[in-house]
Amino acid sequence: MNNKIIINGIDDIGRAAKEFLQLRPPLPVIALYGEMGAGKTTFTKALCRALKVKEGVNSPTFTLINEYTTESGELIFHFDFYRINKLEEAFDIGFEEFVDSGHVCIIEWPEKIEQILPPDTLRVKISVLEDGTREVTF
Image (cartoon, rainbow, N blue to C red; front, side):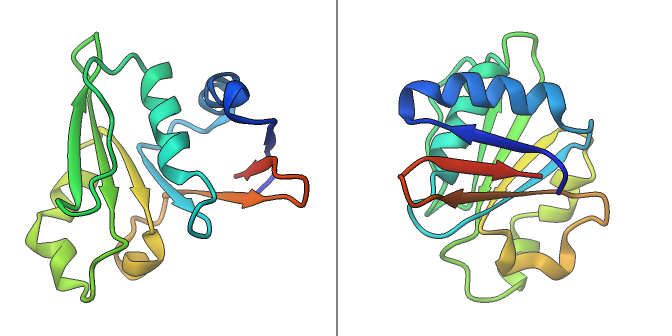
């Protein structure tokens, strides 16, 4: 984790998302680690805005996966594995096909499926600092 981006509040998240997209390696699978309330979903929404997703972005907490389309027709898959109890639940939704598709996959709560993440997954940690700012490291 050599890169670090500080998010100085909600008004700064758009800039941080654009900076992240410029700095990240071109890996399609992005795993977002962070405690509850760290801002994983908020950061995902900002990433999708920066990638010019056409529809609204919401956490797929109950559906496990949402699919979005950018203005240029690219697909983005957004996973939230917070509520899964068994690895089989990821297999049941076809997780492997999604991550092998070459499309951007953003994963919240990847800890729940760590053993089936592709080896080249970009691991991103979002931490809440003492002053309330967020630190994104990858």
